[in-house]
Length: 370
Image 1 (tube, rainbow, N blue to C red):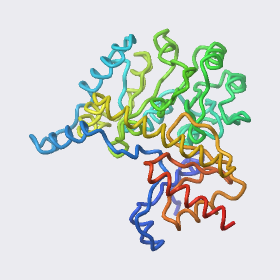
Image 2 (cartoon, rainbow, N blue to C red):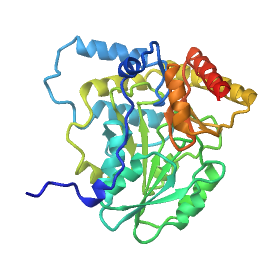
Image 3 (spheres, one colour):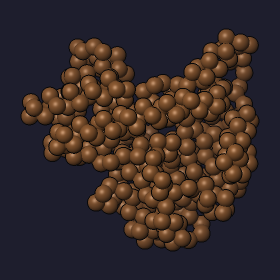
Image 4 (cartoon, rainbow, N blue to C red):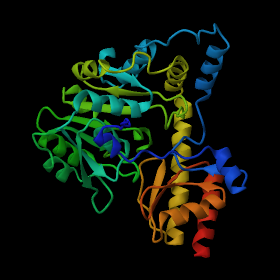
């Protein structure tokens, strides 16, 4: 009797390995009061306005038995107003909502890629790019980062062939936190032929402080084939509700809507995101806490003589001299959860002041124990 098997290109995918729930890790390791600095979440949590809106909704008419607004009318209107206040005209049919920007990556791939096609991306970068591309039988063409851990946009443009239908650029990049700047990004865009969708993953763009960060909305307003992805999971602190959005020409969005699930963002997520978008104070506080934490951690690394990659995101990439698993296991036993992202590389989320100090103390102990 034959056994059902996934398609060969699906079977070849290395699945994403999620972290265990905090309570389960503590139970297994026999520890308490752990801190999680592994998933680049906002340590302040959600906006107070978002929480208030969510509580009001849940205690109100009780329409959880109704399907959500599949078009996200009010959230799209608010996003259009937000961009309009900054001089950028975005129409509702140029927006798409997703179960996090992660889902929108997958929808874009399923819409515009298939067997025989290629997608160019950096290595290392967000692991979901390659997974999504492989899942439709297309080929992922991975270009190593530059020596300073940034996208090599020149080589990525050179890697584009007639088979290339998509290019992924994470800016800031995950896991390195690095960015590509205006001039190099502009040169990259000029080299690309028509018929190639540039997926600009800007999940961390709110955190960027470098004034030379490219304004990718410019390419959208010029009518270029770009899909700009942003999220409420990071700076807005709504990771648990899963809501992100994409901006692109209406034709690109229309193609994606053909396969988007009809009700892919729930009502609570839309309600909270709408309120969070209006809470400028919480966003500014989140960015300030991140900036202060980044300065503290970098000073400590400098004092310790530990190599790190300067970041424009809410995490720091550390190339170690020892195996990442060894560092991860040692920190776990001290109740500090970070993320191994390579054989000798770890990524640590910037947390609250007390969390950052606890990580540094645990990391110092690990280095001393070596």
